[in-house]
Length: 170
Image (tube, rainbow, N blue to C red; front, top):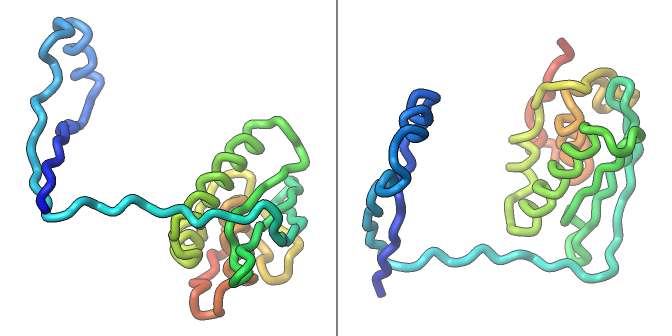
């Protein structure tokens, strides 16, 4: 069975383009749709649903001057991470809000089948504030909180070969 998918091209935008768009009439500025024919529909992503009650691990950590708690909810069958929650000592700050968004996106990735080693590989070495010494002998210095979380998850849940190189303190 063949399916037709309509898409609109998304040209790159510049400030100059937006100035032109502001002066142009609003009708007819969108490019026409293009047609792409595929042999089969793309299967929808399947989310692995968690039971109402599940086991978890809570890990207290410190990166620089920031203290937080990482809670990892586990799948009951293989005891691998299914979701993460980050709670920071300074509740309500910008860092807490961004880390909550990071944890939610990380959790959705796990539940939709993204392998933990791919997520770990992507976030390990990510560098921004807050960064600093951790007090954890296995991860003495973290480039950011997502870097620390990814490296801790790798140490706790992945075989040693999947951890990848640890970034050095700068």
